[in-house]
Length: 166
Image 1 (cartoon, rainbow, N blue to C red):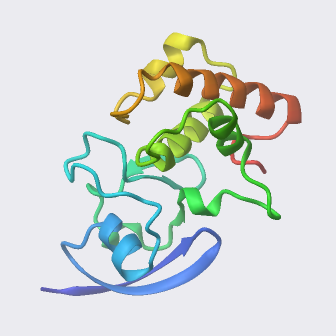
Image 2: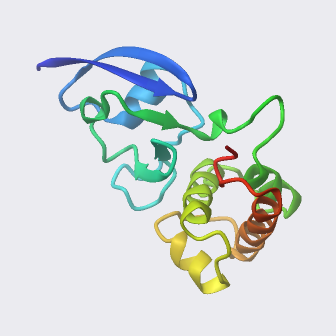
Protein backbone atom coordinates (compact mmCIF):
# COMPACT_ATOMS: atom_id res chain seq x y z
CA UNK A 1 0.00 0.00 0.00
CA UNK A 2 1.28 3.43 -0.92
CA UNK A 3 2.43 5.67 1.95
CA UNK A 4 1.90 9.42 2.10
CA UNK A 5 3.99 11.91 4.04
CA UNK A 6 1.68 14.43 5.69
CA UNK A 7 2.00 17.26 8.14
CA UNK A 8 -0.81 18.05 10.55
CA UNK A 9 -1.01 20.73 13.18
CA UNK A 10 -2.76 18.95 16.05
CA UNK A 11 -3.80 21.05 19.03
CA UNK A 12 -1.24 23.66 17.99
CA UNK A 13 1.67 21.25 17.53
CA UNK A 14 3.01 20.43 14.07
CA UNK A 15 3.26 16.69 13.54
CA UNK A 16 4.73 14.75 10.60
CA UNK A 17 3.34 11.34 9.70
CA UNK A 18 3.76 8.65 7.10
CA UNK A 19 0.32 7.13 6.51
CA UNK A 20 -1.02 4.48 4.18
CA UNK A 21 -3.70 5.45 1.67
CA UNK A 22 -6.45 3.73 3.67
CA UNK A 23 -5.48 4.98 7.16
CA UNK A 24 -8.24 6.97 8.80
CA UNK A 25 -7.58 10.23 10.57
CA UNK A 26 -9.06 8.69 13.71
CA UNK A 27 -6.51 5.86 13.67
CA UNK A 28 -3.67 8.28 12.94
CA UNK A 29 -4.70 10.56 15.80
CA UNK A 30 -5.27 7.78 18.34
CA UNK A 31 -2.70 5.15 17.44
CA UNK A 32 0.11 7.12 15.80
CA UNK A 33 -0.07 10.38 17.76
CA UNK A 34 -1.67 9.33 21.07
CA UNK A 35 -4.73 11.62 21.02
CA UNK A 36 -7.05 9.15 22.72
CA UNK A 37 -9.60 11.83 23.61
CA UNK A 38 -10.92 11.27 20.08
CA UNK A 39 -13.00 8.13 20.53
CA UNK A 40 -13.71 5.15 18.30
CA UNK A 41 -17.43 4.46 18.48
CA UNK A 42 -19.21 2.96 15.51
CA UNK A 43 -16.63 3.29 12.74
CA UNK A 44 -19.36 4.29 10.29
CA UNK A 45 -19.88 8.00 11.03
CA UNK A 46 -23.17 7.48 12.86
CA UNK A 47 -22.28 8.18 16.52
CA UNK A 48 -20.04 11.29 16.52
CA UNK A 49 -17.58 9.93 19.10
CA UNK A 50 -14.71 10.62 16.67
CA UNK A 51 -15.72 14.24 15.95
CA UNK A 52 -12.82 16.64 15.48
CA UNK A 53 -12.49 20.26 14.39
CA UNK A 54 -10.62 21.06 11.19
CA UNK A 55 -9.18 24.53 10.65
CA UNK A 56 -10.97 25.85 13.71
CA UNK A 57 -14.62 25.46 12.78
CA UNK A 58 -15.58 22.53 10.57
CA UNK A 59 -16.43 19.28 12.33
CA UNK A 60 -15.72 15.97 10.65
CA UNK A 61 -15.90 12.33 11.63
CA UNK A 62 -12.34 11.06 12.00
CA UNK A 63 -13.46 7.50 11.27
CA UNK A 64 -14.65 8.48 7.78
CA UNK A 65 -11.76 10.77 6.85
CA UNK A 66 -8.58 9.51 5.29
CA UNK A 67 -5.53 10.92 7.02
CA UNK A 68 -3.75 11.50 3.71
CA UNK A 69 -6.44 14.04 2.72
CA UNK A 70 -5.69 16.20 5.76
CA UNK A 71 -2.16 17.25 4.82
CA UNK A 72 -1.55 20.83 5.94
CA UNK A 73 -4.72 21.03 8.02
CA UNK A 74 -5.09 22.24 11.57
CA UNK A 75 -6.81 19.63 13.74
CA UNK A 76 -8.31 20.31 17.16
CA UNK A 77 -9.33 17.58 19.54
CA UNK A 78 -11.06 18.18 22.86
CA UNK A 79 -7.69 17.93 24.60
CA UNK A 80 -6.51 20.97 22.66
CA UNK A 81 -9.24 23.34 23.83
CA UNK A 82 -7.85 24.48 27.17
CA UNK A 83 -5.92 27.76 27.18
CA UNK A 84 -3.49 28.91 29.85
CA UNK A 85 -4.60 26.16 32.21
CA UNK A 86 -8.30 26.99 31.87
CA UNK A 87 -10.93 24.80 30.28
CA UNK A 88 -12.79 26.11 27.26
CA UNK A 89 -16.15 27.74 28.18
CA UNK A 90 -17.99 24.89 26.44
CA UNK A 91 -16.11 22.33 28.51
CA UNK A 92 -16.89 24.30 31.68
CA UNK A 93 -20.57 24.48 30.75
CA UNK A 94 -20.74 20.71 30.17
CA UNK A 95 -19.19 20.05 33.58
CA UNK A 96 -21.25 22.62 35.50
CA UNK A 97 -24.53 21.50 33.90
CA UNK A 98 -23.88 17.81 34.61
CA UNK A 99 -23.96 17.07 30.89
CA UNK A 100 -21.36 14.34 31.34
CA UNK A 101 -22.19 10.87 32.53
CA UNK A 102 -19.88 8.16 31.22
CA UNK A 103 -17.97 10.79 29.20
CA UNK A 104 -17.51 8.72 26.06
CA UNK A 105 -19.52 11.07 23.83
CA UNK A 106 -18.36 14.25 25.57
CA UNK A 107 -15.31 15.14 23.44
CA UNK A 108 -17.38 14.90 20.24
CA UNK A 109 -20.33 16.75 21.77
CA UNK A 110 -18.06 19.57 22.97
CA UNK A 111 -16.42 19.97 19.56
CA UNK A 112 -19.76 19.84 17.75
CA UNK A 113 -21.06 22.50 20.18
CA UNK A 114 -18.11 24.76 19.40
CA UNK A 115 -18.80 24.45 15.69
CA UNK A 116 -22.51 25.07 16.24
CA UNK A 117 -21.89 28.18 18.33
CA UNK A 118 -19.41 29.55 15.79
CA UNK A 119 -22.16 29.35 13.16
CA UNK A 120 -25.03 30.38 15.43
CA UNK A 121 -24.01 32.10 18.70
CA UNK A 122 -27.55 32.07 20.14
CA UNK A 123 -29.31 28.90 18.96
CA UNK A 124 -32.81 27.92 20.05
CA UNK A 125 -33.38 24.56 21.71
CA UNK A 126 -34.57 23.14 18.39
CA UNK A 127 -31.46 24.49 16.63
CA UNK A 128 -29.24 22.96 19.31
CA UNK A 129 -30.90 19.57 18.97
CA UNK A 130 -30.59 19.76 15.19
CA UNK A 131 -26.99 20.97 15.42
CA UNK A 132 -25.99 18.02 17.60
CA UNK A 133 -27.59 15.44 15.32
CA UNK A 134 -25.09 12.74 14.50
CA UNK A 135 -23.58 12.82 18.00
CA UNK A 136 -25.14 10.09 20.07
CA UNK A 137 -25.21 9.90 23.86
CA UNK A 138 -26.40 6.62 25.25
CA UNK A 139 -26.49 7.78 28.89
CA UNK A 140 -28.62 10.93 28.92
CA UNK A 141 -31.93 12.13 27.58
CA UNK A 142 -29.99 15.06 26.07
CA UNK A 143 -31.70 17.61 28.36
CA UNK A 144 -28.52 18.33 30.32
CA UNK A 145 -26.51 18.52 27.09
CA UNK A 146 -28.93 21.06 25.61
CA UNK A 147 -28.77 23.07 28.85
CA UNK A 148 -24.96 22.99 28.69
CA UNK A 149 -25.01 24.30 25.11
CA UNK A 150 -27.38 27.11 26.13
CA UNK A 151 -25.09 27.97 29.04
CA UNK A 152 -22.01 27.87 26.79
CA UNK A 153 -23.77 30.22 24.38
CA UNK A 154 -24.29 32.74 27.18
CA UNK A 155 -20.70 32.36 28.40
CA UNK A 156 -19.22 32.89 24.95
CA UNK A 157 -21.51 35.75 23.92
CA UNK A 158 -20.76 37.44 27.24
CA UNK A 159 -17.03 37.29 26.57
CA UNK A 160 -17.30 38.67 23.00
CA UNK A 161 -15.10 35.91 21.55
CA UNK A 162 -15.69 33.16 19.06
CA UNK A 163 -16.61 29.72 20.35
CA UNK A 164 -13.00 28.64 19.71
CA UNK A 165 -12.01 31.14 22.38
CA UNK A 166 -9.94 33.36 20.11
